[in-house]
Each structure stands twice: as C-alpha cells, then as structure tokens.
Length: 160
Image: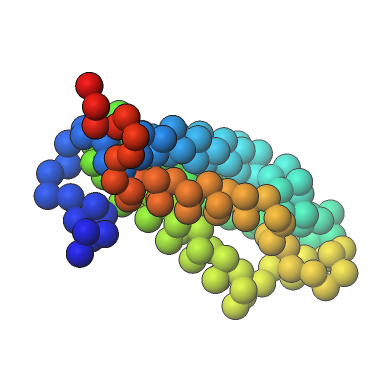
C-alpha cells in the first residue's frame, strides 16, 4: 500500500519523495530522453543507422523514408513525454515516482514489442535491429531512479 501512495500521492506538490538523489537521476534520464527525442526527430536517418544498426542503404528509397519518418514520430513522442517530465521536475516533484514508472513502462513495452515484432533489416545477417546494449544501461538508470524515488528519506534527508 505504501508503494501505491508513493506512486500516486494525494497531493501533487513540489515535496520531493524518496531519496534526495531521485531528482538528479530523473534529470539525467530526462536529459537522455530529450537527446534521443531531438536526435530522432531532427536526424532520424543517423539515429536509425548508428543507434539501432539499421542499414538504410539496403532499403528502397520509399522504405528508407518510411523508417526515417517513424523515427521522427518516435522522437516527437519522446519530446511530448519529456515536456511532462520537465513540469514534474520543476513544479510537481511528488509525481517523480509516477514519471519513473511511466518511463519504465514505455521502455519495457518497447522491448516487448520488438521481441514479438522484431525489426529485420537488410544487411544485418538476420539479426534484429533495435536491440543494442545501450538501452539496457538506460533501463538500469530508470530502475535505480524509480527505487530511489520510492525509498524513504535516509541519512540527512530529514534533518535541518
């Protein structure tokens, strides 16, 4: 029950829940999501190639453009969620656990979708695109941030 109260607080104020490191982790995750969102929106071709190893040269021109357009849409989705995250970080810190949970749900959901509908791209030797190890580091940051935001304040957090 305490988990639910931390995740969905009665008041959405600027009282920071959990460990004092949680806002820093949230800012780091948010910054990375903004970077990925802008990169995907403004340069989807490079993100598809470098980030996910999709050899766009093996696609027809129309197929390649479709992939780039989907990356731009994905970047826009990232940025929309990040606007909400910025509002939470600046004004409604009591919702940090909820935002971490939303980031975790989105990240794991994307992994699940790629598991059941993998991206088989030309020039990848049958491997699935979109499964580079980098997102697992990102996943670890999200999980650590969620745990920190749900923990009670420790050490000097309540002294003053």
